[in-house]
Image (cartoon, rainbow, N blue to C red):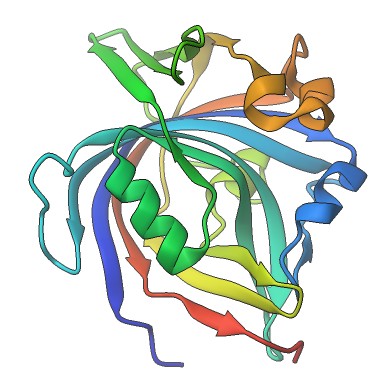
Length: 245
């Protein structure tokens, strides 16, 4: 199969992923056509993800003031059968970035769920540990934050582990309408992870994602927390799915 042309290239760095078990019924209304939930050991998972874009290029061109920025998203795990194989991918409930042009471009071309907020981050690296934090706020709301402290000892992802399930979905899917989905490929090397020692999430989950998700995230211990170093990433131009093969 021929690959679609490249839309975006970047380096994704210091990815925090806090993972929660949710009732599948919460996710089913959000499923794009011709996809179904991808479960890990029978469980439906969502991830609150914070990470850093760096060296970003759109159509091969670095845009001034838009090459380095933060993103925080809430994503879930789905799959699509293309007639020959299952493609494991992700869908998004919310994606937040600090630049409105990024939100507009992604929402227009990919029918994403981007919005814009004030954002900042901090990364501290020593010989022993790594501290990463992402902060964001909308209008007059309070600051939200994701923070982790991890050992500075990179580890390969174990095969068929939860980390591999969370980190290695290489397709994105969005609902265009009741009969059409948008599909795009995401390519990157297998990521190493750092053992997480401490973590915290302080967020208005109800205000950000709605009460149905707050019931499974607010004041709930995550099933797992990962910190991945990241790598260069390629995002392909989207295509449309209009029928189930």
